[in-house]
Length: 144
Image (cartoon, rainbow, N blue to C red; front, side):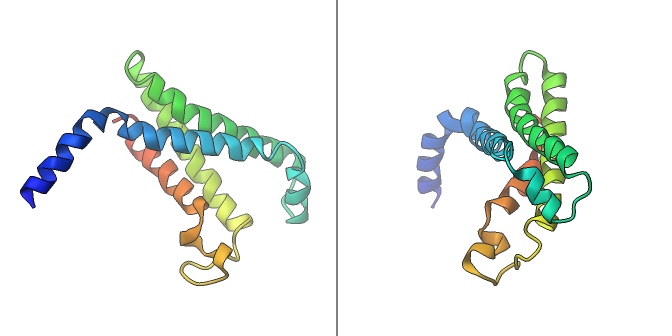
């Protein structure tokens, strides 16, 4: 087993520097696109759910998602040159993603089961939970 681990360590070692970027880019791009997808018709959806001030809420959520997605990526770009600022941007963006996803799960996906339910309505089979987890990861770790 030691030889096999050594073999895989040899393959993975040159990629260690990009491993965090796989998570960062995936989350940043996905969250930006989620926000961008809400630029049309989202206020009507929020209004149908009884959310107060649906136009204002839609604007804040849409821009919050897009900016948090950009922030996750920008925080990593700034990690070397402006390390404290990059660390702060990553943490704030991750926290924003976590908060947005908690409300998304409570409002838009409250009918989803944890393990069982309709195939497309099972929490652990959804990207929403993973967006929440990744956002929370970056809120905790920042760039460290």
